[in-house]
Length: 78
Image (cartoon, rainbow, N blue to C red; front, side):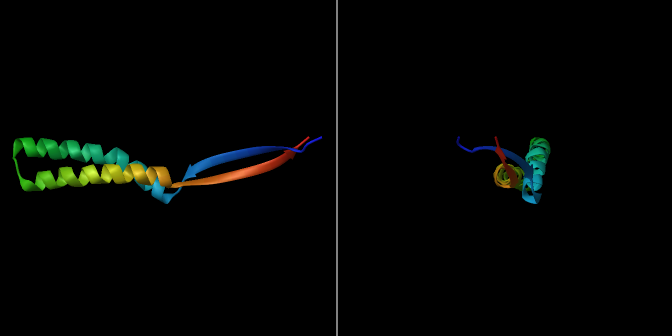
């Protein structure tokens, strides 16, 4: 009779993943404030804020993908 195994895996966010999640949440909010600032008073600083928050949003997505830890437990079953 062949040996059967049961594998239980769980994933958690490490520090990089938590930073990425925060960047995904906060960047669009700051970008909305940047657009409101730009429409009220068109300045280069507002465009800089919009560009930086766009980059941090994409960086947050990458950090959320790679910032995970995996733990696996392998049990032999009958």
